[in-house]
Each structure stands twice: as structure tokens, then as C-alpha cells.
Image (cartoon, rainbow, N blue to C red):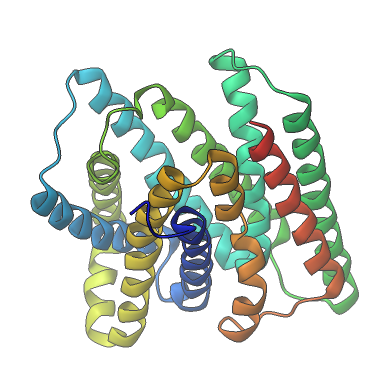
Length: 300
């Protein structure tokens, strides 16, 4: 693997592109299901893929019940609650705005790690946080002004609320398992996170009637479900594997910064696939947000 030049950097960029494609597909075809049902279907596909991979590679299982508790709680918080909120934001804000809003995940993660794990923040990390936060504010302000001028039907307040919940849950999920990440196989750790998240979503979905809606949709909207399955396969399965490859073979700061460029890829994809509009100002603010994340990651 080391003989292949730039494999880590290419893998990190590949992860960013994969996440951009999957998020755009979820935005375009996700309206066939409500956020809870959509997340249940996504996690179902991902869990099957990771289970098959684990049976193939046979990784070593971690010792200690606390590892499983931490990964399980992280999965429920991030993959069940967080991703459901993310899909709710997608349906209200679209792929572009939602992706930019998630640039605040590293900010929140750094803040939570500072409070609960006593991790220090460097001047570069603080600078990156300020730049990213300002850029996200400008994107939201720009879209709010356009909405008022053109009377676009967009649930901005509801979308931002769910985007904030998603970012907080994703950041919290990372902080919970940060101590236990070393020594745990990536595929196995993800499967341990996915299983309790799937169980929670299945119970909620069975109570709300979402499971019946999925079964009905498989019969009546098979093409849409095929696209959503591809998005789940790429976004949750291949995207994570590519990100892990990038983290292993590239410098940590470079890998994280390249992976965080996915909001930039979403701009042309959302115009092409999801038929969303885009402006020069909004694109510029998105670039600034990603640059801020890159500064923060590089300084970490």
C-alpha cells in the first residue's frame, strides 16, 4: 500500500466525494420516506454490508464491556438520533445548506472535548473555529435574505434546528468513543455502533408505522429505494472505509482537511442531481467555511 503514491490523500478526497454524492441523493430521493424511516433503511443497508465484511475479515473483538457500552451509546446518539435529524434538515434546507451547517461539527466536538475531556485548543484551532462559524452565519444569512426576496418556500427555522441537533449529536458521538477508538477495528467498531442504532430505529419505526411504509415503498417505489440503497452503501459503508484509509496513510491534518471538503463537491452535485439553485456568494461562503475547518484540523 505504501508504494502507491498519495493513496491517503486520494482516499480522503474520495471519501469527501462519496459523502457529497450520497447526501445529494438522500436529498433528491429521500422525500419518499420520513426522516426516521429513511434513517432506518439507510442503517439496515449499512449494517448488512458491515456484517458481511466482518465475516470476511474476522477482526479481533475488543475486551471490556465499557467499550461496547461507549460504542453503543455513540451509535444511538450519532447514527440514530443525529442522522435522523440530519435527514430532517435535508428535507427542509436541501443538500447545500445542510452540508455547510455540518461544518460546525468540528467546532462543537472541540468545545465538548475541551469541557469534558480537558483537551486544550491551540490558537490555530480557535482561528479555524471563528472562520468556520462566521462563514456558516453568512451562508444562513444569505439564504434567509434570498428567501425573503423571492418568497421561496423553505422551512429555514425548522431546518436549522434539526441541523443543529444533528451537529451536536455527531460531535457528542465522537467525544464518547474517542478514548476507545485505538485498537478497535474500524469495520467492527462501526458495526457495534450500527446495531443498537438500528434496534432503536426499528422499535420506533414499528410503533410509528415506518416499517410498514418501507415495505409498501419497496413494492411501489422500487427505483427510489434502489437509489437510496446505493446512497447508503456509498455514504455509510464505502465512505467510512475511504476515510479510514486516508487517516492511515496520510498525515492526520491533511486527511481530515481533505475529507472535510465535501460541502464543496455538493455545490455542483446539488445543482445537477437535486436541481438546487446556487449563487456565487453562497459558493464563496462555503469555500471559506471549508478553509476554516481545514485550518482547525491542521492546527489540531
